[in-house]
Length: 79
Image 1: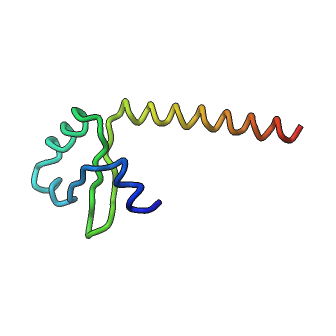
Image 2 (image 1 turned 90 degrees about the vertical axis):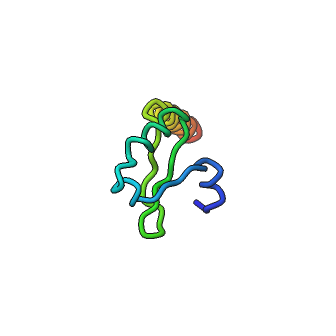
């Protein structure tokens, strides 16, 4: 996925060193309050994304439903 597409969804970012400075609670609270994901960078490379748990569940359920519909479509085409 290109950088341009990712920045469309993940606008906030932080450096891994901020966690070592005791800022992790502040960052987690920011993500929870805004419901928007945060990208964490380590050594100049994208490392992890922090996201709200409820948003994660919403995405996981959407993907599960999408995959079920896709499989159903494939099965129907093969019959």
